[in-house]
Picture 1 (cartoon, rainbow, N blue to C red):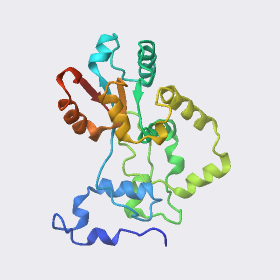
Picture 2: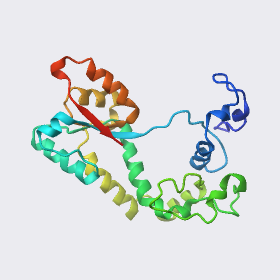
Picture 3: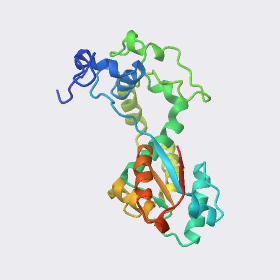
Length: 237
């Protein structure tokens, strides 16, 4: 009784755009909601999608002879070079950067994903919404191969109950995360995105890990700076 099931709301009239609320979503969006909520309810509706990007000060990287990093190891090496060049905090970051742990965990566990999917015979099995789970095979070359699959919260909890939290997989995940997190500001988890963006725009930090939708804000902010404080920057996600 603590969560409201929004399934009925999907068939209500959309007060903003006309038509039904469900018309605002792709079917794959609705499948993802079920995936993230145990396959039974619609406790939220995703009106926004969030992506993260690495922003970099092109002028500084060029001056220091650093090629823009495209892997975590390259990013760590770039941060070391920037520290040697006198940048105490090479990578601006806020609490949202904790999403990096999720990305690393996803890469670590995806090949075992079948163990955590709702299966025929489970109490919440619904053929109409979970058919993608049947005979699912992970395809490393297809990042969207599991887009319509539905996770089982019960199976995930059973795994945790059996194996605990401090597992070899989880240790490896956080070791990989630390390769980058050690270059975050010391207060990164308590800081918000505004502070991280300010550190990047003032060139205190030549690198920024932040939501990609902030690109427009950063572009506008830098254009408003005095000419001698503006700089060339780029990003990739």
